[in-house]
View 1 (tube, protein in one colour):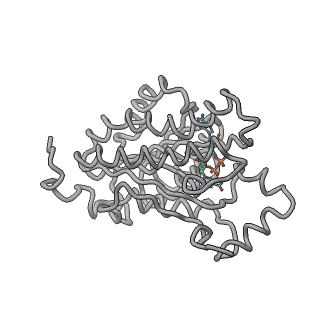
View 2: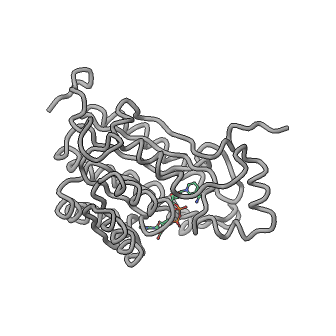
Length: 272
Ligand SMILES: NC(=O)c1ccc[n+]([C@@H]2O[C@H](COP(=O)([O-])OP(=O)(O)OC[C@H]3O[C@@H](n4cnc5c(N)ncnc54)[C@H](O)[C@@H]3O)[C@@H](O)[C@H]2O)c1
């Protein structure tokens, strides 16, 4: 096994079948029953990558996998609670058996834990950090042996948020978890690079998914958001899925330790 990144060969997946520079290896997508995770699984299936879909919602995961199969790829679904770290290694072995390899991981499972700090208790804090942050770390730990089997070119994308870069009074646990995701991403990018694996994050702005639905019910919330966003709208989940697919692909072969903000310009604005 090579230990000096300076002498690693170009990734074996470069130009491999699958289109858009996609390696042919399988990708695990957590939170794939809904929203960004579902859109990501479908975007990967579009370019021929086998996908495994995990979610607490087993029926929803099954529906996404079925839609991926209709696009012509092998797809596996399982009901997995990513906050249960003890379940991850065994479930990953099942994924590798079903797909033949695991050379990609997208951690899109997430919860908002919306509550000002006055109302946050240990249970809410631990539930939010457990899914959003601890699972990101433990999934990366447990996917590593499968990346070694799949070879250089394997890659992780963690779904953070613009709330990992900025603050929101309603979301103390969420903001902490998403900032933590960026920290673990940078740490693991160094560790994984030694073996030719990449680790990146995306920081979406407002995306039209069930996670944000309660906020959209607040009077004026959507309108204010759209007015502050240079592109003047919220995004569809597919508009996050495509940048995630890019980061997993060999088109991004020299991108690691990075976060890609996908927010319609919202955080580029300094308004007086
Ligand atoms: N929607 C947005 O505006 C937005 C913005 C920035 C970041 N994000 C992030 O994007 C990711 C995806 O969110 P979304 O907007 O698609 O929301 P969503 O609610 O549509 O999807 C999240 C999925 O995660 C699953 N999930 C939750 N806890 C789980 C667990 N313990 N184990 C397995 N699956 C679990 C849910 O069942 C759901 O299917 C999250 O990490 C979220 O924080 C969303």
